[in-house]
Image 1 (cartoon, rainbow, N blue to C red):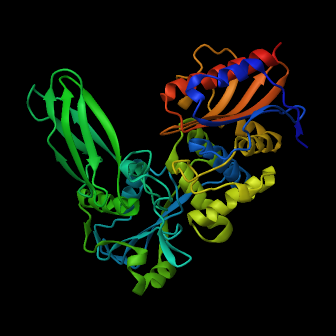
Image 2 (cartoon, rainbow, N blue to C red):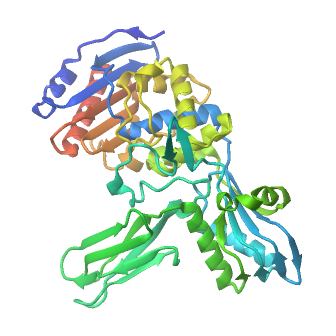
Length: 465
């Protein structure tokens, strides 16, 4: 039972009186995990935008309901017979959502086709990404399910905001590589992996001085524009998210087969585009290879340390598919609320729209984030979960807390005018969990980060007296 033992820590109070916070919204909650007492709170029940602090909730939910050894699987199958090196049927790739499926994994599938002696595929390449919902009915409206609600349109080509699919590859991005040439000439700009699925239009030149790179992908098509200039003697790599990751995988797979002199007579199709014989394919296909992902605990580690949004959103849909047979955001978010209920939160007082925190529609209080941190600390997954959060000098904390000598593991959360920090602090003979959420500030984010670090330092100084 949590006891409210709120102490006025004057050093923290004075930090929160900084003029930069006069018109900002913020909330703070600090709990002693050894005696279950809240030792400091300020606006702790206010609902605020958590940004990537949402990953504390989503990764905690994943660990509790899926377990640390859960693994994703992707299958390669064929239908029909192989006669004289010709497959009289289709090749099928079936996905379960593996967010770490790589270009190397796809090469394994290409090698398997070669090893089977197949030199021609008479049918199609069928992509079964039906494990996740792509279009769902909400009330009287259909909802597009490759992106969560509330993601801003202007960053949908960014590597941190890729579309979500049960068939993902290369984190659903291509790398745009820019290399300087002679001064004044066009720069050498290429796409990796090289694929016709994405069209590149470049007018970038090689210039003197600093880079002035302009890069964007049109919202509705896989056309990437590169302009501006790159400094002489320099090389730059920028990842760009693509539209429809499953089709990206399928088209690139076909290109790789063709490059190995394996003819493909048919098209690249999604299973949902082939409804007339979907059931036949599912019933008659035979698995000839598979790729199994890393364990969930390893995936969750990267999710929190590097703040990988793709991993979080795939986790949400996986939870929905596993528990409700519906790989939708809606079903997955129900699981997040189940987890918060276990933590002691009133789920009527939270607004959840994604698992990564990119949506500004998310609203939760610092107190509820502390409840989640407390629940995981007291659970059988305590040590595993604490180690999922970055420590000083690691991941998103690599350049934070430069002069702090204490022990902190914490998740950052950053959006425009949003900066949050929540996690664990070891001070004296006790462990603490904390959540600090700052919204709607007008100063530079760096200043808010300094305030957060000053609060942690002041808190440690107080606790170690």
